[in-house]
Length: 148
Image (cartoon, rainbow, N blue to C red; front, side, top):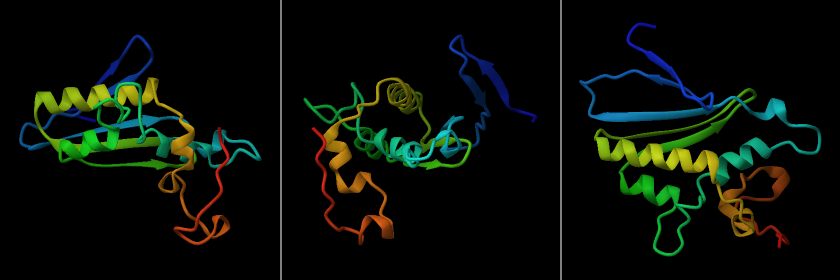
C-alpha cells in the first residue's frame, strides 16, 4: 500500500509505519499472531486472559513503588486504548496526542508489556480482570480465587 514503510527488526518484529503529518494523534497497534486457535481443549480463554493481564503491570510499569500501571500511564497521556483477541491474533492499540515524548513512552510501554508482563496472583483474583459470562455467574458476583 502506498505510503506504508515496512521494517523488520533483528528479533523478527515487523514494524509498519504510515505517517500522516496532518494528524494531531498517533496510533500504535501491536498485533501478535496468536489467538484462540493456538489453545487446546481445557485451556481455552488463555489468549483473552493474557490480553487483560498485560494491562495490569510490567516490571517497569507495576503500579508499585511510585510507578504507574499501564492503564495509569495511558490515561495520563489522555490515550484511548483497548485490546482484542481473535481466532488468529491478539492486538493492543493506543491513540494519543502526537509528540515524540508520547510516542517514546508508548513504545517503551509496549516493549515492556511484550517482554516483561507481570503475571501476579493478585491480578488473577481481581474481578475486573476476568470477563463475565453466564457460566461465571452474574456480573459482579464474587468468585473464589485460591491462587497463592
